[in-house]
Amino acid sequence: MSTLGERFASRATTGFDYARLLLALAVVLWHTFPVTMSTEALMPYVDQPIMVLVRVILPMFFALSGFLVSSSLERAPNLGVFLWHRVLRIFPALTVEVLLSALILGPLLTTVSLAAYFTHREFFQYMVNIIGWIHFRLPGVFIANPVSGIVNSSLWTVPSELECYITISILFLIGFTKRARLLAATYVVAAAVLTWHQVHSGAPLWFNVDKFNLTLSFVAGMVVYRFRNALPGGFAVAIAAFGLACCMLYFPNAQYLASFPAAYAIAAFGCNRMWRPKLVFGGDYSYGLYLYAYPIQQTVVHLIGPGRFFETLALSLLAMVCFAVFSWHVIEKRILVFKDAFPAIARWARRSVPIRRASPA
Image (cartoon, rainbow, N blue to C red; front, top):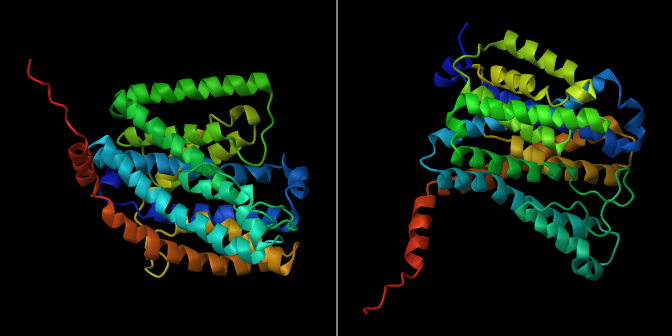
């Protein structure tokens, strides 16, 4: 059986394209339940076994990011270039989504006057989403929806993603990203500490895992990448690891330990060569789906009313596809032409700093 490393080196990685798209669509499907019915209506189902399929989505998303971002860091000539690439990947598309929501969607749907809307504190707070400081409300928008007043709930994971980039940068600077055993030990210690805290606090496991699990899953993806040449790959491995992660996520005290099998599962699935129809995979549409899905779903509910699950899902998906294609081809793809600009920017910055010469004695 070939290893993950062998598959990854041979560019048998189109499975990651399917993984990103499937996980993004899974988030869309899950969010359709609360936006059409309300979060409170789902509370009786929190402890049901089916909820593990919800809890596993974000750990796998962040583990996928940890695996692929580790590869990106390894290829980058230095940490500055790596972080520049992350900035280009996250913030331009996020900025456009925030501006569209605040300057077009909000004014069209708000229940307050435009004067009150554009001078309200919530309007200015929402604009700060551009830098990753997340706020969810715009004045008078979606007030009558089942999930009242929330414009884009999905953005709650943006700070966690930024924290993951800080984490991998620190691990790189102290040399752990190139030392597999030290990286694995870091993961084990973090998982043990978080599990100990979970056991002693008795905190309940809600629909989604907490933000600490997201960062831990990212590190788990880094560990899988570092040990890729020793770990077998294939669909059978992916299914087995996925099943183990789901079983562990059923128990609150095992949620952090589930991050490694979740990471292994997504890496084993991703490291496969699969047919990619150009119509579907003409670009990386997963980030656009993530950014626009929730406000589109809230808008559909606002227009057709609550309680209409299938209608909301169908209409939302149609609009999401359009905005995801727009986001990739008009924003994300075009902004990536600047990915090699960091060295020039760094040289310009150094030239712009005046050098004080010592005066002669």
